[in-house]
Length: 321
Image (cartoon, rainbow, N blue to C red; front, side):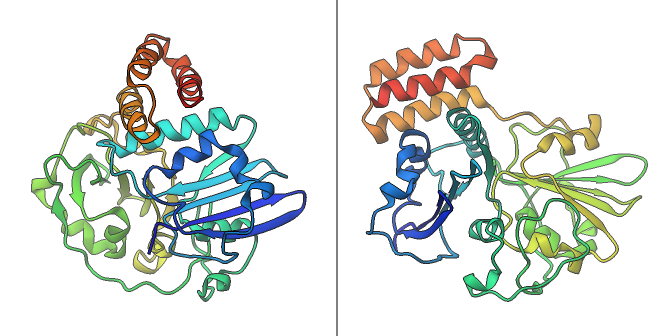
């Protein structure tokens, strides 16, 4: 089975699409920071399968000609705060790949297919037009979704991947911390609004949730963001919410925070804590010197906040040398 990664390299006008059986395994994302040469035509070699894999656990498109990096990965088992780690990791990637456009592939391999201006049929999926969707659309809908009402529950204690739902009714904003995920919530259509449990009401998020959805009942508009993946159904939301207009805010939780106002406190990701977790986990994975790693971490955290990502990147390269 493995943990497959889809890797696409564009270089010198040439393009290669390969399947790496283990490139999506937990922890393998560090390669995009420490081994940039791996993502070149010369390093790909002949041992990869040249084919598409729509079920990949990680995606890397590296366009050397246009200086675009599109990536995503699923497994973050070792990190208690996945949102903070993902935020930190992307900041590190953008620092190391300075001068490149770095984007998250929210719809996995389909985002890569769309970037290459190919039809989704290369993944074995029929094309479905979506004229009503607003916002950046890097992928193409596949099939009409199976619209089912999800079972909605208050978030579990300690769950950091819950969905924050905010509802504006013209007089106030109500906030709820719920499961299931945002994409399953939107499948349920407007009936979801009547089934939000009172036990899920909240006025403060202890940590940044994994995703969020905002409903404005007065204008029949909505928006959503995620630190994860779209999983297909969100770009078909017009099927389940007829007459509504939607925006996808990518990973920008601050839009929902502004719309919710003072009714719910939504924190930023705990990036400093994520730095300590990254050093702990990567010390084990990459066999860093633990004493040196902790010494460098203390030096990083002593720097002004705006300098810490660059300082951490320097420390990572020193430890990996």
